[in-house]
Amino acid sequence: MNIDVFTLFPSWFDWYLEQRHVANVLALGHRLETVDLRASTPLRGGQVDDPPFGGGAGMVLRVDVVGAALAERWGADAVEGRGTRRVIALAPGGRALDDALATELAAEEDLALLCGRYEGFDERVHEHLATDVVSIGPYVLAGGELAAMVVCDSVLRKLPGALGHADSAHEESFSPALGGAPEYPHYTRPAEWRGHGVPSVLASGDHGKVREWRLEQSRRRGSGES
Ligand code: ADE
Image 1 (cartoon, rainbow, N blue to C red):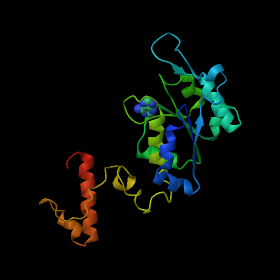
Image 2: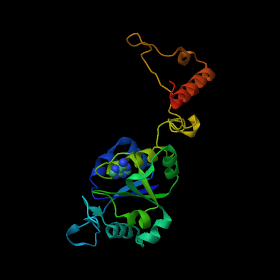
Image 3: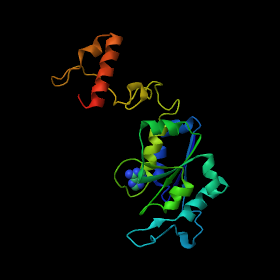
Image 4: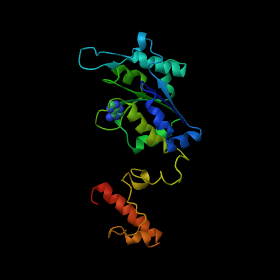
């Protein structure tokens, strides 16, 4: 899978790219690269934004700046190029990221993530350059960079070979294997801590019972019982 992240702050991703689990995925042949939106701006002095028409606080990231960055990266027209891959604009008002969306994106060969700043993008970025607008939650971040990292993290770990144990991503919180419910609780040693033990079924050696117990715990958590 090839992910291009378009951002005004490429260096934010240096730290993320160094993390072991990300480096492991990239070592499998996947690619995650940043593209500096300022590097290809058609405006003088590295300008990328302008005040909103109609007035109001803040600055808006220009559509021609985003279009120029995509066109330079793809070597093709940005509006036509979006037909060849998912182009995801990160914005608080977009489709909420969930496990199903992460799975959907993990099946893509190429992804472009657009990080907004200031008051966000000119609406024409959403309308004509992006295929999707995605939000990581109902709150406003200073920009799309952290949101892009969250999207990358949720997607990359779904790629075959990304996790040490092949089953880890199969039966985890919100996965179809658990009917979309949160994962069941885990316990490890010590078996007794400050008088708190672990559920005896987990040490019973009866795999059928363990499985039954886990599914029930997951179901309860999902229904808010617990
Ligand atoms: N940019 C600013 N806030 C955001 C959010 N909650 N999700 C995605 N992108 C954002």
